[in-house]
Length: 260
Image 1 (spheres, rainbow, N blue to C red):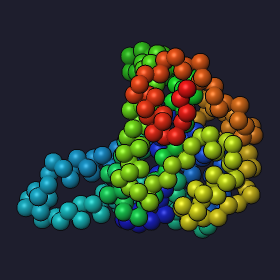
Image 2 (cartoon, rainbow, N blue to C red; image 1 turned 120 degrees about the vertical axis):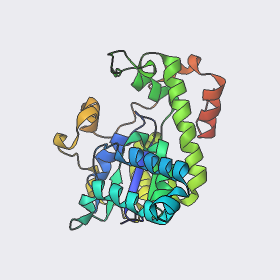
Image 3 (cartoon, rainbow, N blue to C red; image 1 turned 90 degrees about the vertical axis):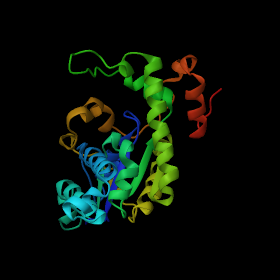
Image 4 (cartoon, rainbow, N blue to C red; image 1 turned 45 degrees about the horizontal axis):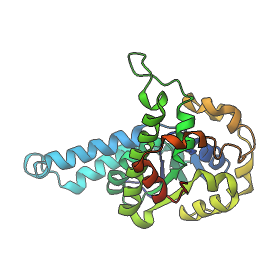
């Protein structure tokens, strides 16, 4: 698996619907979609660091061709997260760490057959959800993006911009899925996604999974994840519209959102 065939990486701004998408994908008989691991981003960025800083030293000092280094790092990553893909019936492994978005481009170089899904949600709704979190740094201080509306919107703008750049760079290897499409037209949106990763729609996608499926921070959204997929949370952040700056508005428009 050093080319990443069968691996799909989800990424996007936290609180954009990645766990909702996982809640639906776990019902597919040929897909394994587990919780966040954080491993793809860290390994891909480490490989990128090796590649950029060592350059020809791989060859001159260690007698290693660049492709050998790539293959070793690819084997490390797929070996750490790919065990489910070896089991009977599992054809696709979906890794849903939100900050994979930071490493879509190096992951694409590291795993040339892997595919990528950029999950997007309206900045205002993301910010409203972030502001309900109690996430703190190592000193127990709340992060700015969960305590200040402008910081939350700027956080969305930066990460969404990285996602847009990855969409352009990866072309037909990267698909954008919006939260709004997922809840308004789940079957159509999932069918598009499944075809992108070589699978077919399965009715089991709408079965509600056991709550034990969800771990760690995912459990913050447990009441929503164990209920039906509903539209009620679309527009939940409209009260934050007065906080939109020109860069946030521009990014929203670039992603197809209306800004009055």
